[in-house]
Length: 101
Image (cartoon, rainbow, N blue to C red; front, side, top):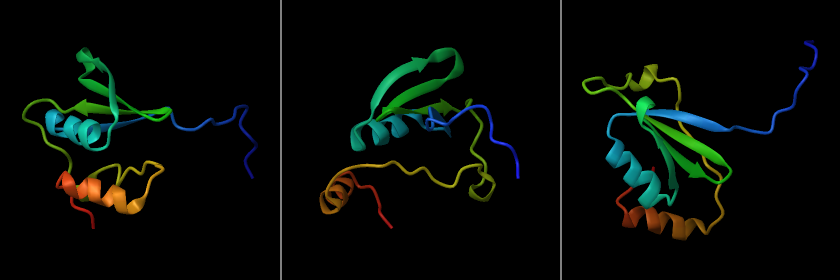
């Protein structure tokens, strides 16, 4: 068994998601999910969104580049913890034309 590291985890500070359509992505996270755009780091093409105590960084891919195929992506999904009535949440998503499987 490995020895314990000389530090403790407090949780995640941030996650970086690569995106191609920043306006569409900002609309989803800010307008639909209600996150706040906290800052833009222009020289890195990063838009930082506040998600409770944590950050979601959206990094804009350079023009002309695309995302890796779904099977090759390094992240499968992102799950956020929320409080709320599930029926109301589903109604809200439907009102914004967000498909739910």
